[in-house]
Length: 389
Ligand code: RFL
Ligand code: PHB
Image 1 (cartoon, rainbow, N blue to C red):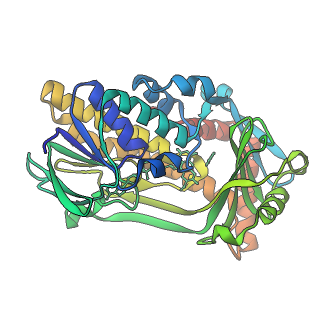
Image 2 (cartoon, rainbow, N blue to C red):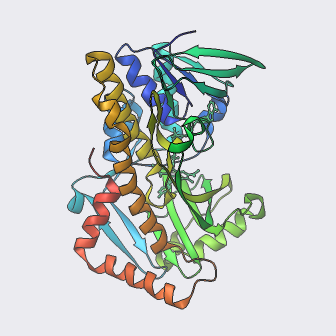
């Protein structure tokens, strides 16, 4: 079997890249480890930067997003007692859009079905070879047998636990990594959101985030110990803890109900030293993970896809390899800026277990400065709504 671009992973990065390449007439195949049902039912990100929305438009997959996406012109930040709002439209000139990753994935699958795309499920890639040459290939498993795909390029969009990164040469494998000593317990519940916009709340009991998927579907998170198990938390326990971390006015409005999903995410920061070697590209979570506090993960996957698509299309349309050479540097430049922001926001809003009173005072001072200084809010708004690319 031969294709021009072999894509590992059918998450948002792999699907979006495939859609964009196929619209240009470049052949692509996606190999996905899990079933389609599994991939399209995962609950993940919810906040899209304007650049991500623009890319979904350009890829012709934004019809439902236009109808159902919720534009948010600001966000609320609270210290558990009172809250203030950062106005995105005034300070950054653009909003963010709340639209679930689950929905984006479904929209992309529908569009790729129409294109007749070749997406192979339950097909884990196990080996990538010859990426230093013009004839790379990869091996994947299907029904217990190994198969080979020959291609011009391999793009690993296979997430943090994927194989792509392992096939970088030893000397380029160095990672930058940090694990936070806490995680997020998240629930989805069929209840109206407590507020029209997101609330990030830093309370003395720990961090809480009130988000949403629609006007009848709430997505709420609380900070818990790292590696906490969701089954240790009854819905009742969750609501009690969530309520006491909100400003009292919002806590009063909280409507509770049964959770329809409950999971724990570890908070991790990780960046691979390079996002390309020869004809192997890494895109999205395969090459970097940011803590979810800044809502940047999916948005970075989208900006990587933008740079990778530019590189591949310039090669196929014009025979030019400059953008291929530039890919890793451009994508990583944006990743590190988003990492700085997510890191800063995470550290300002989460008390560490056994945190010293000194560290606590510093967090309060940081929070107060953001509350009072318009210039700081401007930097916040520009980062949250997405730096240009
Ligand atoms: P994905 O979505 O992990 O997809 C990778 C795919 O690769 C497959 N795979 C393989 N396939 C074949 N062979 C192999 N050997 C394979 N190994 C793996 C996997 O099965 C999978 O289908 O990566 P991608 O496409 O890079 O997308 C990244 C995003 O999913 C991620 O960054 C975001 O969800 C992060 N994130 C958020 N990002 C935002 O921009 N805004 C948010 O509001 C936001 N909220 C979040 C988040 C992540 C969270 N969790 C679960 C950590 C909230 C949470 C709680
Ligand atoms: C979400 O809605 O899932 C969400 C929103 C904002 C974040 C993280 C997750 O920072």
